[in-house]
Amino acid sequence: MFGGLVSRLRGALGAGSVPAHAPEDTRLYAIGDIHGRDDLLAQLLDLIAADAKGCAAKRNILIFLGDYVDRGLQSCEVLDRLTGDLIPGFERVFLKGNHEQALLQFLGDAAFGRTWKYYGGLETLHSYGIKELTLSDDPKDFERARERFNEVLPKSHRRFLEMLPLSVEFGDYFFTHAGVRPGIALHRQIEEDLLWIRDDFLESGSSFGKVVVHGHTPKEEVVFRSNRIGVDTGAYMTGVLTALVLEGSARRLVQTGGGSVPLARAS
Image (cartoon, rainbow, N blue to C red; front, top):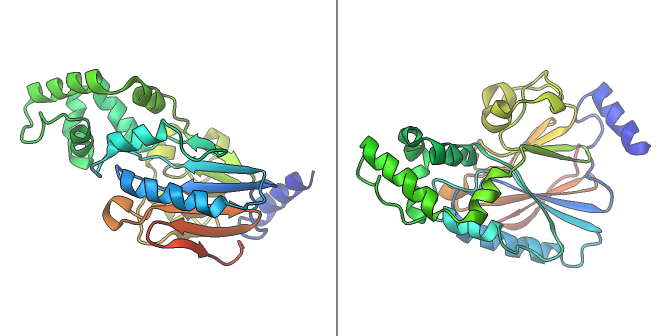
């Protein structure tokens, strides 16, 4: 009853007028773009496990915001970790990023490799031992690489990639990879925008009905706005992989290289 009242008040008054809340007795960890940095992912999961010790919350939930592959050199290792055991007792939600979409597109269309290769796909192929495209843009080599990738990609990785949802909601927060189209209800958002949108979303000061937590656009520091929180800290370049921790109306960060960073209460 009261949660619905708060949501209606936020819609009427605008995002930021009433503090956003995570669900009661729940701690959320929203993890930004990993991009083939399994070393950082392992560190961050250890930090989260330590952070959760003694936690009073009944539910601990890991929410991964997509872009697990490409750019970094350990995409295969990242997917191995994500498809295995993570932190005992934690629920897990894995969202789809535009780079997962690109990988799947290449598996079905060798010609798309001309695009994918140059925004991180080459590093992903190398992580699976596929070297045909290292020094070649020959269409025959793209086809050979695609066929080889289909052969060596573990079934668990393919299943993981094919089953990723586009968004999830918890309390007053909406989680997705890239963002949302302003002026469109959250339940009516399309895949193209949820995976790819940038300026129209990033520059909007409008309320989206819930606070949107997203990755996709790397910044050196987490971006806090009244209507959105950007959690992509460019891990593959900076070495900083970030988890945004949401509990009640409180927000803080757990980061590789930085540990736990307390923040002012949500407003």
